[in-house]
Image (spheres, rainbow, N blue to C red):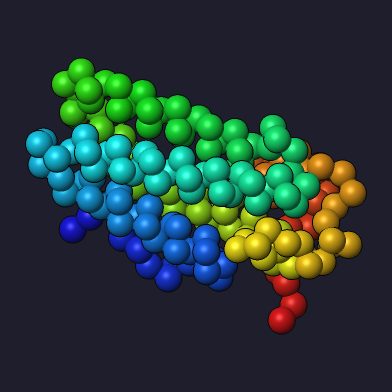
Amino acid sequence: MAALEWSDGLALDLPLMDDTHQEFVQLLEAVERADDAHLLDAWKALVEHTEGHFGQEDRWMQATRFASSNCHSLQHKVVLQVMREGTQRAEQGELDVLRGMASELAIWFPQHTQSMDAALALHLRRAGFDPVTGIVNAPAALPDDLIQGCGGACSSGDDEHAAHERQPVAA
């Protein structure tokens, strides 16, 4: 059994994001199941997916008034940097590093999804953002100032917009 499996608990009701997240989980599972001969290739496929995955979310944030230095984007950069370092170490024969990283990603990903990505998905829905076209259908719903926090777990209590993002939406 894989350390992380897709479940409804990871779904955020934003189909393109959910599809991307489901692919991440599948690729992580492939890494976890890979034998030593196939581990690096499986890891590289996960890294390539993650570059596109995080890039996509970062573009969505830019299009909807997140500051480029917001903590969600910064977390993406750090995780990708660590994953790339894992690739370099595995290329030098340290395959155990990838196995440890895969285990840690299986712990990190649900937390990231249910905090930062959940807040982003809520923000995108409120702005009427179409992830496929990149069109903001409710521009008046966007904040006047750039979002400095991430609208999730690492936002400060002073971040009025982040606090607003955590409020439930009436149906």
